[in-house]
Image (cartoon, rainbow, N blue to C red):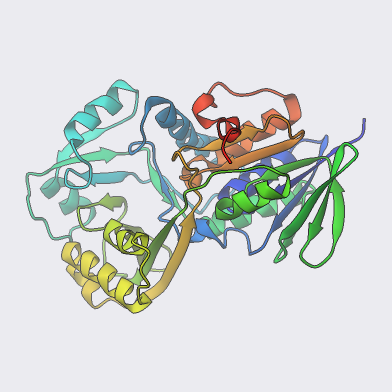
Length: 368
């Protein structure tokens, strides 16, 4: 039997996970293509928060919860020193009606530990400014974060060890049908045939879809994170406050994100990068005063690949044979899971029950 060639466009955490799972199948030849380095796009700019606690409705929660649990399987296969399942602390000021949400999550089988700000922050982030010591705090012990650069590099490397080919720095400019196959043309003029195309191109997924005559509706949003060098901060979890989200990062750093900064960028007005950095520092320092003078180790800007209705777009597209989409926000949480589900879909023709109609790419078929 001839081996099936599958080309995965995009090598962020989602695309790298798909390439890895496909490459493990002896009946598949895998080609992975990205315009940047592995994880060099949106994945590298995110907070890389593994979670389902912040997800609704129920089927979207279920998909994300399965995504968090998929990392247990992955860490049994890879070195995964980039994986940090150390938990999340959410303050009531971050999540509206947090106590009710915590109770709902427990009903859904999600582990929640209930505590207060003085206890939680005193133990896990003692340098934090505590406005209300008695404030309700939910601890989600099964959540965590990843070093996306390390994760995507290891996934692509593991795929290559299974025989996958990887090409970076060159995007796809044409996709044409040639018999039952597709001919892909790259920006450097190279062309090749493939049996299956997987669109995991993140914020550029709508452009890739257009190359096969498909309209994919995205509503991308800009995001910014900043890495501060602050080796004296004692933090071992993600902490979600009303001012800023903060987590550990590599090499003595912490990474921060603030909705207020993203909100300024969403207004569409030209904003000086220096002003955005200053706003982030202001928000971060209100919660962690030590960050007022901490050196900046990196500023990361990304575009979240969010389908127009805010929900994941995963699966086959009717009328376009052997073309699959894997486009989603929260790709860090769901990347390895989507890698497995797409592989099952391509290799066995089976659609997992987690992929409800809410996540079916065909919901966009009537849009133009």
